Amino acid sequence: MNKIPFNKPYMTGKELWYISQAHHAGQLAGDGNYTKKCHQWLEAQTNCHKALLTHSCTAALEISAILADLEPGDEVIMPSYTFVSTANAFVLRGAVPVFVDIRPDTLNLDETLVEAAITDRTRAIVPVHYAGVGCEMDTLQNIAQKHHLLLIEDAAQALMASYKGQPLGSFGDLGCFSFHETKNIIAGEGGALIINNSRFTEQAEIIREKGTNRSKFFRGG
Image (tube, rainbow, N blue to C red; front, side, top):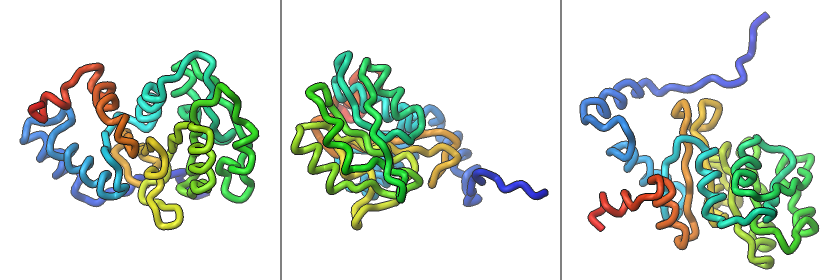
């Protein structure tokens, strides 16, 4: 019997050369030339205010949860079908995940059920673009704006996918991508935080730099 692999990482053939270049430059810890190139590419791809590489999409979701400034008991709406990190990121901040059923055609959050799940403790909606198929972002944006909620996209599987011509990850206040080996573009592990709402940029950089202003320091600020 021939086994069908769940995923098969694709290599372009240049990976070892890039690694050797980083090694020769003495920059293996991140935030070097290749990090800058990735940030620039992501910002151009999504037209976001700022992109920040993280060690995983889970980390990007956890940073998003911190930026949401949640209090214990606050509620976050998300689909009932998703990876555990979507919920864990917000549970770690004391929030309560409110699971809303999914659509049978896309396996995405059913946008017609979201508004009924909103209470006075709801603080955010987290749509998950399952398998790179976009949620109904027009509707979800309208609901979030109407109820003054944050919109945080779990776009782990959706890099370079779009909804009505607009890149997924660029609709919400924040977006999160994954570069795990099962995803569209891989780095073994890795992720990215996409910041579309500029009010989160400075704090996101501080969180990513472990509570310091290291990013500003290296910019000469």
